[in-house]
Image (cartoon, rainbow, N blue to C red):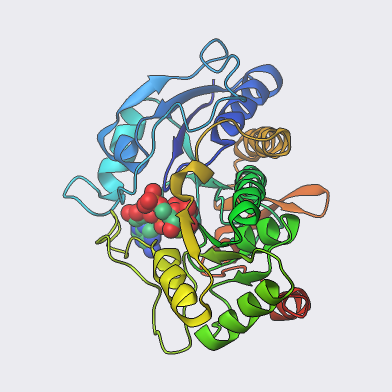
Length: 343
Ligand SMILES: Nc1ncnc2c1ncn2[C@@H]1O[C@H](COP(=O)(O)OP(=O)(O)OP(=O)(O)O)[C@@H](O)[C@H]1O
Ligand SMILES: O=P(O)(O)OC[C@H]1O[C@](O)(CO)[C@@H](O)[C@@H]1O
Ligand SMILES: [Mg+2]
């Protein structure tokens, strides 16, 4: 009987458990496959650290946030044991015929390298940031937008009561999708995204015009936003497990600048990991389940080196090469359309 190992890698995301359940159900019920779960992302693959993954284990997990397998930013090549020879030997020892890697762009880049080194592997795209070009949407994004929109709604009522400017910082390292969607949904007066630097003067002009109409200004800013004179996003929290700057904090920088320039009392809120935690939305559960079923079909066909993706209404298969290195940013004409109504 064919046996596959599933891992979740990179930041977690609501909907990962729906993928795991969808894969196991489709695999067991349609293809007669067996599965094990690698613990802690690529670390589990390198050290052969697995947990059983059968129907009874995935019962009722679609509605749970996080990942029952655990995740990490551990790279499959970063330690002495991280060699393709070692990984293939561990797989053989566990009777694992192929690997299903659920993750973002980094996880897919690592999977692509493993594939070139002879490891049979396929991918499932995940990220709340929705910034993978090869798929129209990733699961987790919808949940994050719902949470961020609720935050905008709540900030607006307290902002209105005090006639304050409220600044909400949301995630989005290279792409401002969460800021755009939550900002539009919540009727924000300015949305600031990594794709389009804006000057402090321009932001304060928008804030002052809202104040002059007797309203309380609402600004949504993505963590990756920069002023025109910044060459990289603000970071003061060191590096992550893959040596990238941990972002976050631009909202706290912006708020006192707005207050100083406009005289409008301003408060900043950083939403942070609240956007990534908790129960996935129904939409994300459905997309995750569909991806899971499709990836079971993919390994049944031995179609290694592919990633499942959503195109329109359909789940398709795309080569890893299409999936890595292409960031799906907010199109500037879309941003400019929204920007025309700021202030
Ligand atoms: N080109 C690469 N070659 C080998 N390993 C890589 C490569 N890119 C990333 N990795 C490894 O894969 C891990 C997962 O990637 P990363 O941390 O970027 O998360 P991700 O899957 O992109 O998810 P997200 O960024 O959305 O949280 C990295 O921490 C790193 O160890
Ligand atoms: O704090 P962590 O877990 O390293 O992840 C933060 C990053 O993860 C993301 O949410 C992508 O998953 C980015 O928007 C953010 O910069
Ligand atoms: Mg990444």
